[in-house]
Length: 514
Image 1 (cartoon, rainbow, N blue to C red):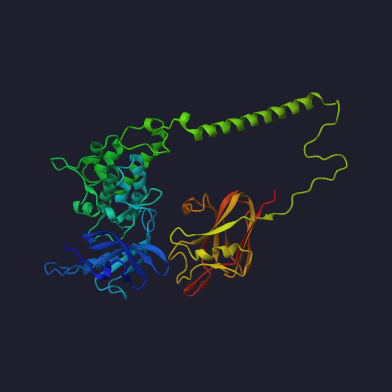
Image 2: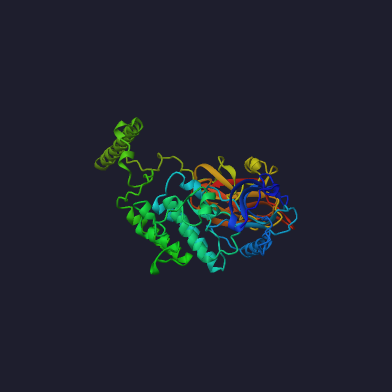
C-alpha cells in the first residue's frame, strides 16, 4: 500500500472538527492507512487516543485510488462496535465519518477512544524480557476482550504492536481502534500469540515492517523457515506458555494449533491458576532478576541484615517494645493473682467500670459527632477531573460556595461512566451518616468505600445509592464498615435538555457514637 505523505492535516497541533487537537504521533499501521495519535479533547479537557485514516496518494492501478472505500468500510465497522465495552480494550468515544465538518481534506475518518495510560509494548520490553507468569497475566485481559468481541461478531485488530499499550497495573489493552478491513478473528488470535511472544522474547513474530516501525526486533527463524520457540531463546519459559505461543501464531502441528481467542484465554487462566502452587518451589532460572515482592530471591540480592544499621535499629526498637509489653502483662497477672488470694481480707474489691460509693452513674454514649478532618479530591479515572481547583468549596462550611461538574450535552454514561468526589480522613472512621447539601435534585450518587484515594474503580465497594433532593439529603451509613476513604460517585447528573450538570454546596460526615 502506498505510504501517505505527512501534510498539515495530521501534524502535531492540527485540529479535527474543532474539538480534538493532535498532540503526539505514537505510531502507524500502513496496512490500514492509519496513524495513531495522542490527542486532547478540548471540550472535556482530557487526553484521548485517535486513530486517523489518511487519504493515500492517488494510485490509478487500484480499485480504491485514495483509500476512500477502505476508510468508509472501517468507519462502518467502528460504528457497529460502538456498544462494545471491556477492560481489555479502550472505550470508543466518538467516530468521525468521512466528510465530517471540520475534518481536514487529507483525513478520511477517525475513531476517538479513551486514552490508555501506561507504556507502549516497545517501552515495556526495552529493559529486558518480562517474567513468564507476569507476561501471561498481562495478556489475559486482552484475550478475554477478544473472546467477548468474537462472540458478538466483532474483531479487535490486536495484531499490530503499536495498537497495544500496557497499563500501570500491568494489563495489556487495545489502545487504538479501527482495524484493517481484512482483519478476522484468526488474526486476533495470532495477535494474542504475538504479544505474548514479544513479552517473553522482546521480538515481534508477525510483520517485519510493523516490527521496524515499532522499533522492535523481528523474530528469528530456523533455516527451514520455522519460528524459533520462546524456550529456545530464553531457558525457563514454561512448556505451557511455549506451546500456547507457537499454537496461537499458527505454527503448531495438528492438535497444537490454537484456533480461537476463547482457547487462548482458557489456557492463560489455567496457567495462572497454578501460580500459587508453583510459588512453593524455587523458580527455574529464565534470565530475569527476582523482583522485590518475590518469595524466592537471588542470593546476590538478599541484603545482609547484620550490616544494615537501619534494620538493626528497627530490630532493637522492636525488642524494646516487646519487653515493655511482657512487663505489662506480667504486672497485670500479678495484680489479678493478688486480688484472687486476698479476697475477703482488706479493702473491698474494685469492680471495673464502677465508681466509688455515692458517685453518679457513668454518662451514657452521646450523639454522633461530625468528622472535622475530612478532605475532598476529584476522582475521575477516565479524565483529568471536573473543576479540580474548586473542590475545597464542598467542605469549607459554607453551602453557598459550591463545587460543580462540567456542563455535559449528554447524560452519563454517554461520555464517561461517572464523576466522583473522594473523601479521605486522617484515620479509619466508622460513620453513621453523611449529609449532602445540593441544588441539583435528581442527581444520583453511589457511596462506595475505597482502599486508597487513587484506587481503581473496580477495587471500590458499594455501600448505598441515593438520589439527591433539593437542599440537604441525609444518607444513613449505619450498616457500613469502618473506612478511611469514601467515594461519592455521581452516576446521573442534574439538569436536562443538553445541559447536564450537578453541583454540591457542602458535604459533612458524622462519626458513629461509641
